[in-house]
Image (cartoon, rainbow, N blue to C red; front, top):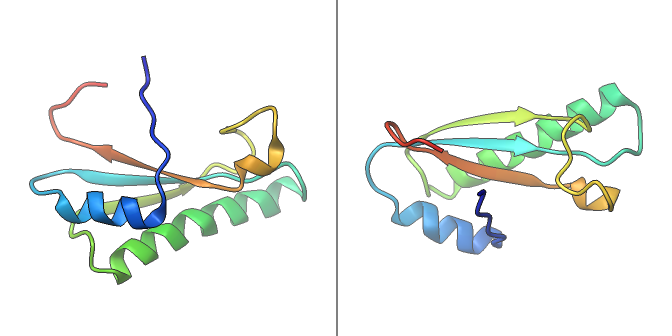
Length: 98
């Protein structure tokens, strides 16, 4: 079972700032279905990179971060396209299994 939580940027910064030890952040950017596929791919990548830059600029993480744009190929919410204008932050911890 996948557990998820929705947090604001401020809550995310606090959580990341409190982390110690090893781990890598994977930031996934998404896009809605409006616009062309190439444009949405660029937009989703830009969205992920913006979150990555924000976290680094705030000095909240020294962890490695990776940003990926998923375009419209993977959706957060299939029923409501506009809710796919978002990014997710995943934490990968060495040695942990999903």
